[in-house]
Image (cartoon, rainbow, N blue to C red; front, side, top):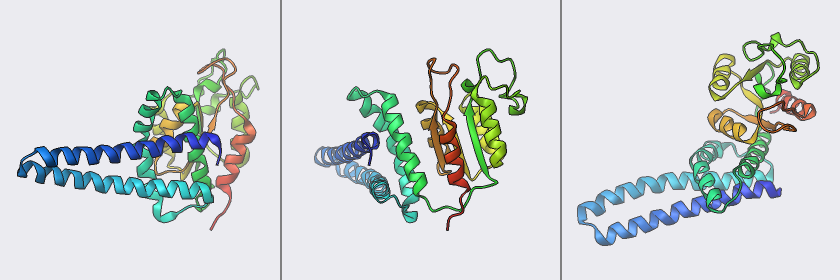
Length: 251
């Protein structure tokens, strides 16, 4: 398991322990000081939270086992997805407390997600695959409205959009370009994919992966030679490998 993946997993385990410890502290405090009615009500509340934490704990174990074995645990897919959705905000807060750059945490999360997706034994998504791109891949000097319709691109070679369109045509994968989360979600609703390949920065990839749960998303981080959100590029080989992964027929 890579160092980057360990960062997210370490924060995830710390978040789980903190929540469990907080639950025990609150329970003991209310049990000692409250009335019988308050103790009863607090007991019900603690029991409900305990059930949630149990599911989260099971999901965490599933994530660790899946990453170490590089195999999917089908029965634990829902708890694993639930764990990520519940604990991710806590992980980000912990990162701030320990002064860990948020993009490092998000990069680690994307790598963990990608390995979990690759471990799944799902059927081929060929014919129901979506390639989702950020608008910052388009050259800043270009006047073509590719966000409204990618086919407006002249494929002149001055930015990555034309090469990605050619790649999509070669593999029969539809492509959408979004300016933000709202348009990205709209593209997903309109195309109804079985799987998504998303290109973006760590922040947008993370929010997109969380929004798409339980849909499998392989994230490819864009390259930013001129800074964020301006004339970005992407490794075409990495995108093609992601396409081929989802097109393979698996049992």
